[in-house]
Image 1: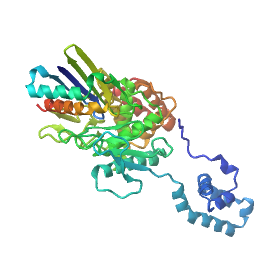
Image 2: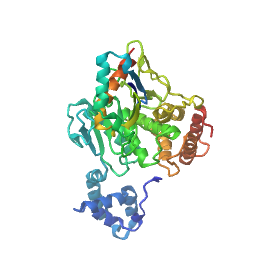
Image 3: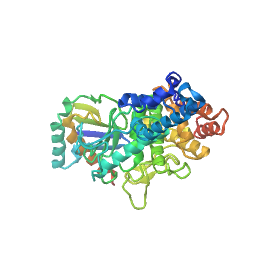
Image 4: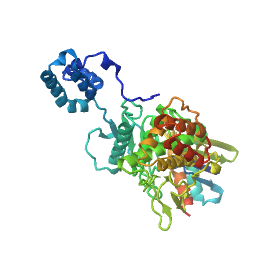
Length: 370
Length: 102
């Protein structure tokens, strides 16, 4: 849907720079926004100095440049997108819509779930905008709505096609579902996937859908905490499980070591496989979509740690550009996605480059041979 | 009366399930379950209860009841649970959690 090339504004060649700088100081917000988005100042300053007719008088040209430059910071801020968050409470029922408790720009409420959801949405928006230049779920600044205190002893969080709903947990086995920032990242990413490939939510395509949410959920956490791939814990839902002395309740899932996140008497053991040879064929969970997601999850972890640096940089770009590529369909399975990430890595960083090899090796290591 | 209950899916992808055979329960408990089934208007409920949009990470609940010659199976997803079924589902979840904590 978006093959996002570096910013290119052909209109710059048509509208003279001095007109743009005049527009940038207009009272009309629409004119200011137009000028800003087309005014590539570095380039324009250099062009101006090369001597368009009007700017053969350097002193006047510099005065004009100074006026635009001092105005630029607040003009830039005005034109930059911002997150738009709305947190409601469902009062422990499943009734929607809930009652507003916190809107964008409102101060913390003191209710833990409300404030965690608000901050988690902000962290998710930041990853998508700062790293991938995606403005919210639909890339058009869509409002991010979260309903907290959803249901009674409700041990879940879900995306309902329009908004996110978070339960408080049952208090015995599960804590609140706003406890880990990657959970908010995971749910919002389901919205992104819905607007992009819209992967069908069952079988292998569903497992891929789930994996994409875990991968970007993990990137939200890593970006927020400024952790490199080597420093990251690669866990999903850390702290979600109520501790059971003597047993493992570290997290819900691990991209680094699928199958090791938890092992305790009432839940059993983390059933995730790390390799296609252990793919779980089941009718439960829409065909084990939360189980078999471990395979592509692990592929991303392997690729990210092999490439090195921050996982949201090159590995994130490879995955994100693949996810928004029109070649991704609702029926895309693991192998076709793997193929796409390998060719995307080649396009972004060079054919037969270190990055492309790392991605191919990662998929091979989990049993997807492309 | 036999009640078979399962909940699967959800963010954690875990399954919670339990079976209840009222013949093997104390009289009071058996009566409680029969009342819950009646109050839910269970045998009149639609078999399939799907929300308008698929979304992701919803729970799926399945309640399967056999009472004498009558049998009915109701499936519902989060966001589309028939209101009369909510109470029964809460009780079944508690029963399933009890059997989980052995």
